[in-house]
Structure formats: C-alpha cells, structure tokens
Length: 308
Image (tube, rainbow, N blue to C red; front, side, top):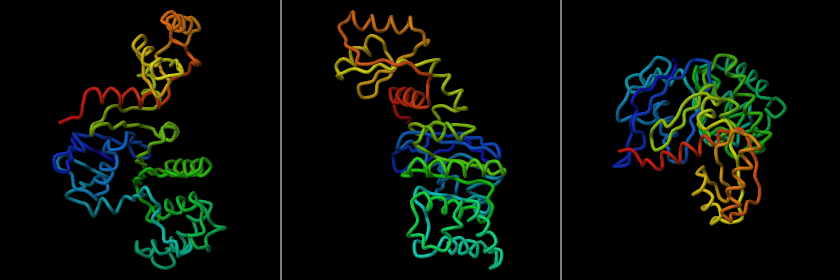
C-alpha cells in the first residue's frame, strides 16, 4: 500500500475532528474521501501531506512516516488545494518553469517539463497568455500541471473541481484518469458524488471523524438495496405522515424508500398512502446512487451521535 493510515486521531481543543481513521490505498489507484462539511476530510489530507501533525496513530505515505520523515514524504507527493495556486501575473508557461526551477530541474529541464505538461493539459495555445485571462477550468488544469512537475508518486486533490462548469469538470476527470493510467496514485476529497462514482477505485465515507463506510461504488450502493422508490409530496406534513408509514429517507418533499423495482410494490405503496389520505404528486423507481448511500449512512451516524 502506498498510503497506510492506522488509528489516526486529531482534536482541536475539546473538539474531536478525527476519531481513529484507518486507510489503505494501493499504488496506481484512486481513493475518494466523501463526507459532509466538517467530517474531517481536509484535516485527513493535511496530516497525510505533513501540513498538520496528528495527535495519535501511524501514517505512512510512499513508505515514509509523516511525523518522523516529513521531508521524504514531501519529496514523493504533491497537493492541489481547493483553490488554484497560480500566479495571475505570469503566463502559463512561466508558472510551470518557475515551479520546475524551484524543484531544481535546471533551466533546460524545467522548460522541457513545462512544454510536455502544457501539451498534456491542452494549454499550448494559451501558454504565453497571462493566467489572469484564463477561465476557471484552464486555471485548474494549470494548477494540476504544476503539481506534476516533479513526477510525484501520490497526488492529493482537495475538492479539485469545485466551482467548475460541467465541461471543465469532465476535462479534469479525463486528466485524472490519464494520471492513474501512468501509475500515479490519487487521493481526492470531493462533495460531488458523481465524481467519486466515475473516478474512484475505493470510496471512503467519513462522518463525525470516523470511517462510516468503505468499498467500491457498486458495493456501497448494494448496501442501500436493489432499488429506491422516490415519492414526491405537496407538503412536509404529507411527507412526515408517509415516512411514519413507510420509513425511508427524506429530502425536502421527497421520500425515498427501498423497493424491489416491481409494479406490484409501487401499487401497494400508493394504495397504502391513498388509504391513509396522503396525496402523492409523483413517483419514480431507480437503482441506488451514491447520493442514496451518502444520505443513508450520514443519517444513521447522526442518530448515533458524535464520537467521544
């Protein structure tokens, strides 16, 4: 495993942020950390990248301990944060060459690496324009290119596509897939469940500072059930009544309940609601998504309470 985490704990004052996280990430794979705001995703990444010291636990990245060998860890990783760390007053090529020089590649080596990365990320046509003229997607691609100057073994991406339009997001996803095909390991945090579904070999859902679930996207979806029946109501009162009868998970005026996907089950559910005087605006059946997994697990851990 290129990333190994055992019993990771971190608290700020009296607030527990991480309450014993375990991770194991194989080389050349994508591991996605999911979780609601404040779950501990960014703190986990900061510890793995040596920016924050853990209170307890053992963390190895590329075979090196993040506490005892932080310099060796940094030599084998790169971090792309939530906001593009580029110099607006320089051109795209100048940004890349600057990082290459800082990484001791030499003038010629930095220029060669910059040229390769500009082509790889489809930025050649804009390489001599100031970055302040770049779109959000172009800035994000440049930011990722800058993190590859030193050919890191592990790349940490903290919500890499937040704020991007759908086309730019898809371009970033393609770039990430290309990196994995070359053997690079990616550990990303994201709030886009579709992003994790498309990219991740392993998904780790963190909630209340603990690992609430882990596995492939398909395995996690299987935990929720074969199908989901979504019922839309015209008021929260009707939804509450329906939830008392059927159980399930609610979001605004939509109730999602387990189903076998059959027309007979749909008929039974609608008859039950009709008999109890509850009006249904619409009903639809679908296979579970990561949204269903996310809602199911986070609601369960919320009922169980925050760990001590």
